[in-house]
Each structure stands twice: as C-alpha cells, then as structure tokens.
Image (cartoon, rainbow, N blue to C red):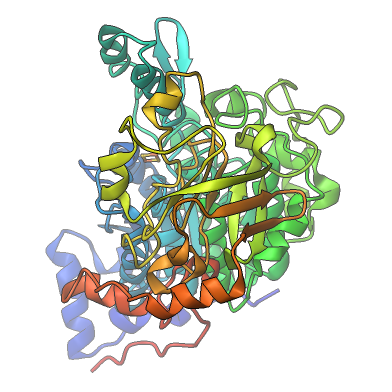
Length: 575
Ligand code: FES
C-alpha cells in the first residue's frame, strides 16, 4: 500500500504551486477562464480525454458524458479539464482506421506528459479508440480509468433485431444473391444504427471494452452498459469520483497491468468469442507494459476456455441483451476458476472481489459452463509454411466443414484486383477453391484494413454457397464471419510466403493441427522468392511515411517500434 500523496506532491503542483513568474503565468491563465486559484492548486487535476466527434457516431454521446465525469471529479474534490483527442472513426476513416491507432496513442501519451494533469479518465468506444487511449495512458503511467462509451441499441428492421456489421454483411450477401429486393435493402438503412454507441455485436469495440474491464482498467460492470442507458451516465459520474481517489493513492496502470491481468483478458476474450482484432491490440498493450504475449498463449488459453457469450456474429443475441443478462461481471463469474482473481483493478479491489454477487439473469445469452456455445475458445492460431510467424482464425464464426480443407488457390494481387475480377463469370473458382488476397497487411494495404472477409464470388452465391476458405494478411471486422484466415505473418508486402502463392497452388488448412501450409516444394518456393520484387511504398511524406517506416508486423501488435517498450521518460523541464 503506497502512502497517500500530499497536495504538494501532485504533479500539477509543479505548474500551479510555485510562487514564481511561471507559477503566476500558469495560475493567471486558469483565472482567465474563470477559475479561482484554490479551485485547482493542490487539487488532483483530472484530464478527461475525449474522443467525441461529429464524424464518429459511435462516440457522439461522449461530449455529454464528459459532463457527468466532471461532476464526479468536482464532488470528489478534484479539478476536471476536458480536452479532445483524435477520434478514430471506424466507419469513415480510410484507408484504414488501424493506421491511426498509434497516432491516438502518441497524442494521448504526449498530452498527459506535457500538460499539468495528475490523472485521466479516458472516453472512447469506437474500435481503435479503446486500444489507442489505453496504449498512451500505459506509456505515460499516470492514474487512469477507461470509460467505455457503451454499445448502441439493438437494430430493428420489420420487427427483427439487426446487428451492426454482421447483419449488414449477411443481408448484402442476400442482396448480391438476388434474394432480397432493393426496397427491403434500402429500408434496412433506417433501422440498423438507432442510437449513439459502438457496434452492438461482439465486434472489436465490444471486445476491446470488455477486455479493458477484464484488464482492470474500468470500474466493474462498465463495459457493456448501453450508451443511452441512464446507468451509463451514473457510471461516468463514478469514474470522475474514483479517479480523484486514485491520484491520492497513486494507483497507476503499472500497478494493475500485470502479466496475469493480460491472461485474464485473453481468457475473457475467448469466452466472448471476441474479435480477432483483440489479439493485435492486446499484444500491443502488453508490449507497452514490457510483456511479450506470444501468439501461442492465445491458442493455449483458447483450448481451455468455452465460449459462453451467445452474441453475434458467433451467437444469436446483441450487446443490449448481454448487459441485461448480467453483463461482463456475470460472464466472468462463470469462469472464475480460469481467472487470476487476485488481480488489482482501478477501484482498488481485486477482480475476485468485484465479481462477488454477479449473476446470470438469462442463461441463453450468457451460457452456463454446462451448455456452452462452443466447448473451446472462438479463436485459433495457425502456423505453417504459409504463415511462419502465425495467422489467426475465428473458428466459432466459420462453417465447421471448412476447418479441415485442401483446395486450389485463386489469388488476388490486391483489393483492386479482387474488386475487378471476383464477380466475373470466367473466374476459375469453385466452392472448394481458396480465395487468397495479397498486399492487404500493415504495410501492404497500408494499415491492414478489414478486408479479410473476402466476398464470395457472385456465381457461387447464386448456387447457394455462403462460406469458403479465404486467406489474407489483412484483418477482419469483429462483426464479420466466415472461414477467414487472417493476419498471415509475415505479410506479403515484406516478402512473406503469402506473396509467392499462385493460382492453382494447393493450400492446406487444418485447424485441429493448427496448420496452414502452401503445398509447393522448397525449390519452387525459392525460385519464386528469387524473382519477387518488393512493391514501392505508397507514402513518401507525412504520417503515412512515418507509419510505413516504423510499424511492426501483426504478431508484434502493429505498434511503432520506437513506442512499443517500457522505458522511463523524464518529466518535462519547466523554466
Ligand atoms: Fe464504431 Fe463499429 S463503427 S464501433
């Protein structure tokens, strides 16, 4: 237990306390906006880092929620200051929001370092905003609480619940197959996104906010409260109150984010059949804490954790159902024996203490161990001659008959090539073919977009085919589904074996053996490698160029090499 800090020991006191010219300047500028010196001097100054934006509908309510956080900070005797951070909008940001996660992490870290703040409440929700904010906060290591924005309400179309992403893709497939009219398709547009909040399927946002809670970085029960439920506003208030105490206690991310906390997050990820993107983000978060999470650890934990969350795309329900069925605490209580219950969380209690009294209200939404959705975790890690450094597959969302499959490759050089040819009548493809997409990885695309759920060729759709083996070095939305092998490492752009696959090559996928192999000889592979030419980078300046020079591969979390370690940074000099 650390000694309680004194007002003079607060970091912000360096700015506001001294009777110097600089102290005068800092105090006078707060007075400029109407505060008195006693409002902020010697009080925990709490940054409310807000990813609210009018171009990010998932986080649209966070401007209002920040007011509730402020109320909590004031009530607990702190001084709140809200400021904006880069709002990575999953829907709108191109070529891929993933390219900008590290930029948000850098902005968060440097804002916390350079400004007079003692602690932070991080407001995010839409996919990359959760890992981006957390990565920055971990590296700065000031007391911090994450407030997840919460899922949006269930979609509704003619009385049917609709899930973000998952049902968009499902009904688009039917539209392409000619089984859904234009009028039906258009009418769905009004009902699929009915309120602020993040995607209400078990996509990346729902997964990452749940994992933030499993890591101990949110208050208990915070991750699945629907964005517009008044419980969410009360949770925001509690975050404001608690962060002030955390500053006095000097409770930092480094006290919470142990190796065991990450194992808890992986365990919860598997029980949720979480988004495959979570693997990349957890690896990146762990590296910021100084831990290396080997991909094999995900597979090992996956093999002993049942899928209990019956949420789309792997299951039937949506996040609103999950919350009212008991939420994440209830799910974690079902797998208590698989968790490190002594892990500390932001409320100063252990995970085990926080699970006391949690119960499942609807056992069809949060399944009991005796009736899981799947007996083992939803995600597997594959290795083999096509993926020497690993690949990822969400088996819970795939047609089981494809989990052991050998088929001839149909290769697309990039996404433009895929778009141009996928629906041509003369494409030499059958339902046994394996669709391969190259140059869709962290550097190749760039930004590793969510292209991994390659479309089924129209002529096969019309024959009733709805799933095929698809392989790429890209990612897949957590709301997507199908027998898609993702994150193939090393990526094709840097000369991974995926770059050398040609039409007609046989590829073997064997999920049980955890293998992904290109069935050509070593000699032939060497010949192809010798004549391969690395494509030119697509950015010559700006952030894109920095990204291409310094981003790591997917198995290392796609962080920048110069950010992904635990190195003490000096506090800013002040003269
Ligand atoms: Fe924001 Fe899905 S688009 S969470």
